[in-house]
Image 1 (cartoon, helix red, strand yellow):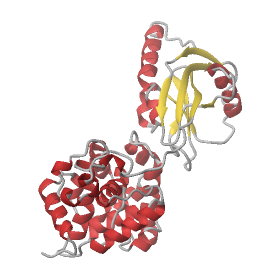
Image 2: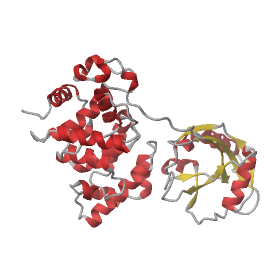
Image 3: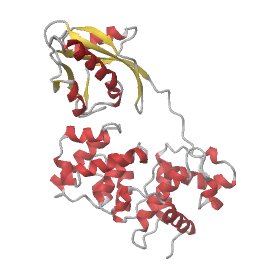
Image 4: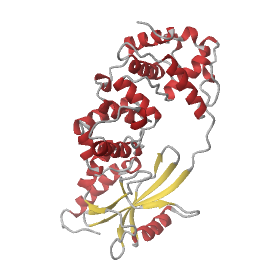
Length: 374
């Protein structure tokens, strides 16, 4: 076995001896490998594993995924966040069935025409599944590479990513069969297990003798990432509006933030508004209705990728009339037992335990008479 660079052999020998036993490493089928790479973006391996297994049990082939409903697909993804990933994967599966006769494209140029497939996904999937020599440059790879070579340029710059891609392509092995995929996974594995963001295990690294950061004791200097601005935080109010034994939910548009998920009505507070005032205004604007607050629920704090929220939930009832959604979005009146059938954002899940407690107490109070207070 020969390689273009001696450190490649060191890296691959280390990988073969220490790689984790992960379910997506038990196949060379491009579809489950694609699913795993989409899931692993922005999500830790330990979180992904049960989702991956459940997802492939329900959608074992690209055809099954293409034929799945949006709600079922989102429900299986629920809790992992970054929902644009699964919406893109779902659309991509439908395009594969319609435009490629069910065969996932096997070239980077064609593969990247599918929704959600950028340079990283294309390189990772094609190298691991099909052994095509395309370096997959993610955060782990950039961290390992900048430390090894002492690169202090800002990794947010696309020029740095392009430079690393070019350099890795020059040393990426093309033989024996499987070497390109192993190279991709070895770099990722080294970053995940040894060359970690905090407290890297440099003594265990197969490349430490040649590593610039290790030999110069400058590990903390790499990689350099320019600071971002302060993450904004918004105050939000939502209303759980119910009548008799059901409450109102509505579906978000399929595109955009949290697209396709279900939610309770509400929105961001205007300047100097109290949470209650925000709720009343949003209900009037969104649903053309007035509500009466029956009980507030505890404040919920939740962080998304680019902003945070403080969410004030209120259990409400209609004052008069009925709800008339102004945007013609799908809506339902559901019972508390049906709540788990619908995919909701993570912030909403934080209020579900208290909401279920409320309904349990509510029904207990009204069990004898069979009457409802709303």
